[in-house]
Length: 63
Image (cartoon, rainbow, N blue to C red; front, side, top):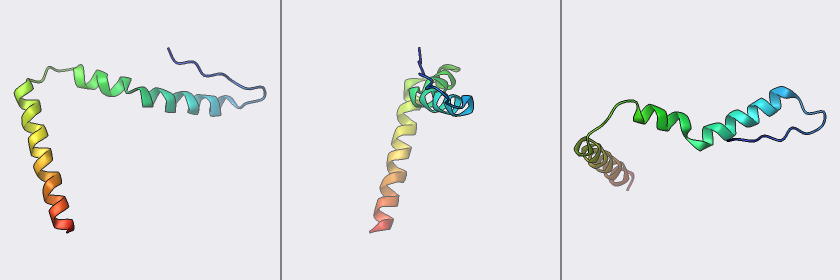
């Protein structure tokens, strides 16, 4: 549970902004979207390898 202490005289929009930022950092929405559909481990591994190759190409192009 996220708790946001509101200071005396603090604007409610500011407190809401702090709440949204804190909630985003927890990664709850990202986790919900990830769990929405099951993804096979082999597909996850394949995507990680493709990403690693892409990043390596970017690093070599930088040099």
